[in-house]
Image (cartoon, rainbow, N blue to C red; front, top):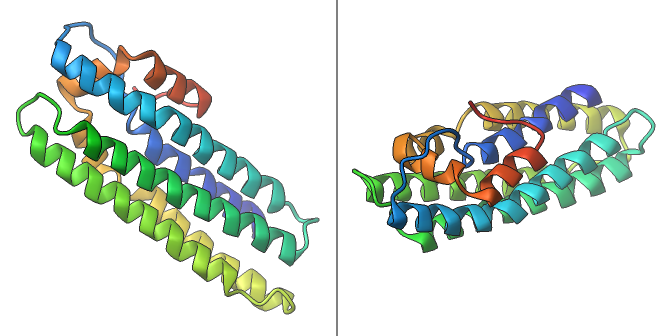
Length: 190
């Protein structure tokens, strides 16, 4: 059961990777400036999400007590909620990218990031509410949380993918901080 939770949690890091594009070298100064602002803001948040995932995976090993798992998960979910909210704020602050439908892409991405943030905040409340005295009930509660996480990791990055299509993705791929965010999260998007 705990391994299933850890696997579901690791999917959360995938969402932030949607903000790290790849390929291309046609330059557009306004777009490059926008991408640099977003990428520089995303990098520390990607590291925070990676760290939260690592903490959860460490505590979901079979020898951790329910209290230790609850405490680690609660902190990690809060960290992830804060990180996605900060990424949403960064995309919002950067303004629309200088591309066709840039305003819609930006609005959709911010809405989605804020939604992901709210989902992690909700998971934190769920994990905080679990009864650590009853191990069977606690395990059942974790199963429900793992199912929610699984859904969260599989959905919700459509607007981010749309945001980083074409020129925006190319501009982001030219930013060292976006390349670092991808490398630090241990995966690349092709």
